[in-house]
Amino acid sequence: MHHCGTLTIDTPRLLLRRFEAGDLMDMLGNWASDPAVQTEYGEPVYSTAQEAEGLLNRYIVGYSSDSFYRWAVIEKDSGRNIGQIAFCRVYEELRTAEIEYCIGTAFQGRGYAGEALSAVIGNIFANTDFQRLEAYHRAENTKSGRVLEKSAMHITDNVERFRQQGITPEGEVCYCIERS
Image (cartoon, rainbow, N blue to C red; front, top):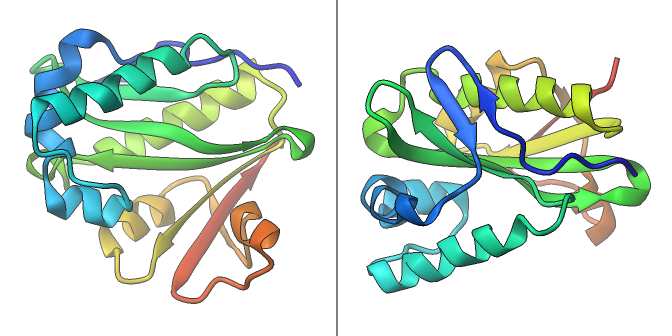
């Protein structure tokens, strides 16, 4: 499978790039320590700089592989790291990836997650041979639902994560987009 890794993507209001050591305090202050963001995102809350630094270092080490896709979402106006978008799972044999994203509470409601998602979809289909991208949200996570509803993705019955576990999604709404 042809991978390109985490290439920098420029959008009208955002810069999507690899995480850097200097992102630590923005990560911690804008989203990684916020239970409202992390709970909806399905990730642990990082309460200290030391905990967040461990997470950040794992991200940075991941860039040694071209099959690692994780972008820091940088708001151009402020230069701050306001969230992230990533492939949390890659199914090489199927040329499929599952996308996850989060935006800090103070930056939500501005269309940033949708802008990032659209840019990543376009970048991946232009630079790799992925055939399908998937995402899902818990039904009660209406904010994430609105992002996916507005995106180029469409509702589907299931995603690979659940197929491989042999379960039918209950309480999750699944989306996908195929290479056209």
